[in-house]
Amino acid sequence: MSTMIGDLPITVIGEGDGRWRTTTLCLAVDFGSRDDPPALGGVAHLLEHLLMSAPVDGGRSLSERVERLGGRANATTGLDRMFFQAQVLGDHVPEVARLLTRAVLDPQLDDAVLETERQAVLQELAAAAADPSDTVQDAFLAACFSGHPLGRPVGGTDDAMRATELADVLGVHRGVFLRRRMTLVCTGGTAPAEVAEQLAGTPWAEVPAPRPWAAAEPVAEPLPALAAGPWTPRATSADPDGFSWFATGSRSPSVHDPRRHAFTVLAQLLGPSPASPLYRRLRGQEGLVYAFFTWSRGYTETGAWRIMAGVENRSLRRAQEVVREVLLEVAADGPDPEDLAVARRQAVTDLVTTAERPWDHAMALSQETGLGTRPWSLEMGIRDLESVTAEQVRYAAATVTAHQLTVVRPEPA
Image 1 (cartoon, one colour):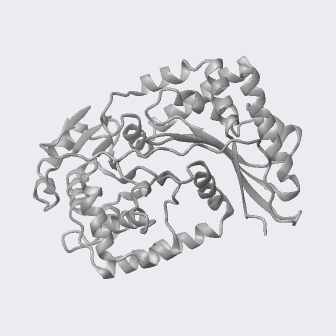
Image 2 (spheres, helix red, strand yellow; image 1 turned 120 degrees about the vertical axis):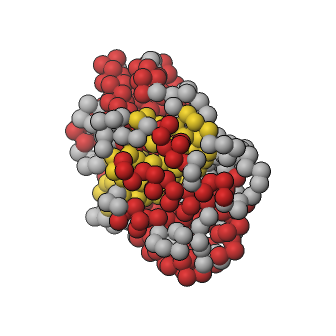
């Protein structure tokens, strides 16, 4: 269900279910770390913190007010999306809708709030820098999207964060954030039509934000070609008793490209399930890896398909080789028919279980509908996954192996 709110760049979509006593509101914005000005890496992430933590109407922050109502609130910054979420009992939806719109559109920011959240972000960056399973993901995206805004770390850098001033944040908020498409997704007990009516009485039209309100689409930047050359495993420190993380993969289709479904099925085919041929090789036959993760994610212009694994340094090279060997086997011969059927079922089950969690389903709806610009339903998603063929999965594996990248953290000394 989709409803426009006056002449404002916001659409209300969602799926109501009267069996739920709670409602999840998710404001999704076509804005993320890719929109950070070159000298202000991490400003989008910092803005997200500020909008959740600044006083609303001179009182407590959005986060605290939602929590005091017994609900939960959170926000997330991605490469090209930002999400603000709240889950509350149905009686509190009108109040939270008002608080959410006021907090996001007309934040009461000052230097004191900025400094508090700057310190929180710096602590977040320090924790991430100390965790190789975190830094390896940034390193992989930096290699996959080298020279492109999608390759920037979401959190930015320590130096850029310390140099960011209040005027910088306000400039990005008013000059970029407020001009981007926004979609309010509601899942749970309150129907989208009800939420749309409640928004009509909120401060959207009162906020002194830039006019006109027409949503400004992000500028798509050309992607530099990936470097050609033979694939080689990566090394880490010389300590054989050490432990490292590696990430390997390549680009995949964008969030708008129907070919992305084959890459999703490939991720299930080579995922951390005992039914996966990669699991059988990595863990069962050779005992190289205890835990690994496989996923594909689409962004505006492109996507990224990857495998991430933690492994003892003495097994690091062989673990990378096994991943490469299994990918090449699928790229050459396609998946085993039984393994493909299992992977499709797993992909469908993952989609359905996500839809059964209102918090996660709200984010998924915003992504699959392109922020309310195209139709999508759970049934459509299931059909897309069930129709993926062996040849499409073979093509996906061949695409990954053609320009396969591998990074390791910690880096060699």
